[in-house]
Structure formats: C-alpha cells, structure tokens
Length: 287
Image 1 (cartoon, one colour):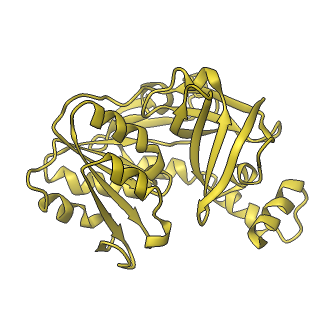
Image 2 (image 1 turned 135 degrees about the vertical axis):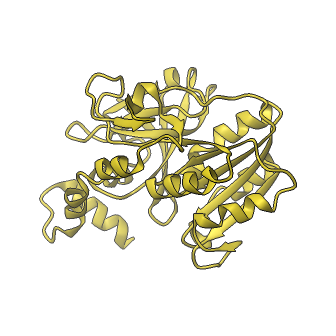
C-alpha cells in the first residue's frame, strides 16, 4: 500500500492527492498516468500525474469528485493509504521545439497539463495557457502557470474572468496571438476536448488530446479502454493516452464514457448509505 502525504480540496469538488510512490516518481514523464484504487473493494481508476518529486519519492494527482470511486479517494487523509497505485502507464507526451504551443485545460486537466507545459518550456517553446471553467472560482494553480508560461488566458462561462463563453471562444484566443500556434494540447472533460478539436480543425492546427476512458488494468489486457481513432481500434492505455483530436470518434467515446453514469449518480442519491465511505463523504460535504 502507498501512504498519503497530503489530500486537500483546492477548489469545490476538485482534490489534490500526494502519494508516496518513489518508483513511480523516479520514472514518470509528462502525459503519463497511474491506476489508483482507494481501498481493497474499490474500483481501479486512471488519473494523470500532475507533478512529482523524485527526491521525496512522491507523486501528485488532481481529481474531480464525481462518483463512488473518486468519493472514496476524497475521504482519504494524511497517513491513510491507497490499496493500489500502479504506474507510470501510457506513453509520454511528445516534447520537442515546435515553436508556439497552446495548452488548454479544464477541471482536472489544468493540473495534468502542468508537467507538459514545463517540459515544453524547457524544450524552448513559447507556451500559451488557456484555462476554461464555469466561473473564476473554479480556476486554480494560476500562480504556478504565470511563473512558467509566456501568457495565460481565461475562459469562463459566466464571464467572471477573461473571455465569456465556452471553449468555442478558443478561435478568438488564437486569432489574438501574434502568430498562429504550431500545435494545441487539450486536457479535461470529454466535451472540452471534443469541442476544442472541432474548433481547431478548421484552423488546420495539430491538436493533441489526452483520453480518459474507463480502464481496469492499464496494460492493454482487458480491452475496456477501446477507442476508435482514424477508423481503427486503439487501446488508450498502451496506444495513448494521447491522440490527434481530429481523428478520435468522439460520438463513440462519449457513449462509452456514459456507460455507468446512472450507477455513479446513484451513489449520491442514496438516502441511507450502507457503506462507511458514504457516511464519510456526507460528513465532508457538511464541513
């Protein structure tokens, strides 16, 4: 088991989790992920690595609390343990001196893009960061990015910060740059990645997305993470998790992501929780 060094909510419903995992910390690369299980009865879920400290032997992940498994993770605290923490898994992000790269992050994608942006800057790129959220209070790690990247833009649906609207404002951001970017990297919810890819297709800009389907083993054995890319079946865990956003079958991908949506929602609708973890989650909301 891996010990928890830190667990805290950084914005509503978004949690930071730092875990002791020296073997992973010594090998992980930008864009890779880990498979985590909160307890012995829990579900194995893939989570991108947002940062790591090789000297301390720790990795940091940021996740959104949306169902039973992430709810169980949100109940953990310092000195608790996770039953499973396996990685690093997946292929690392392609890093090179491309020129100008726009990184678009929403919800947990804001954090998982941090090591990518850092590596791109170290490779000599001009890096533009675009945050997308419902409101300004859901945007985090701004101070980290301001010190790292060349420029930061914000898109909020309520107009409380930066551009008012959705990711459909991305072309406005791109047109406002001195020169068009050489590539766009998007990480976040399925809707964000799909719409951002749609926005950049007409602009002819290579767009890379980090897919997050349901996974079990993360090594290509179970086949649960099947995705269709350019008309061919791929496994997100071993062929990805990054693919060209213009080649992903987004309709199929969204349908597979929704497969257990009703069961996940049921977790929060139970009036008399039967498991201790449900009671812990309720207490956390009340606090």
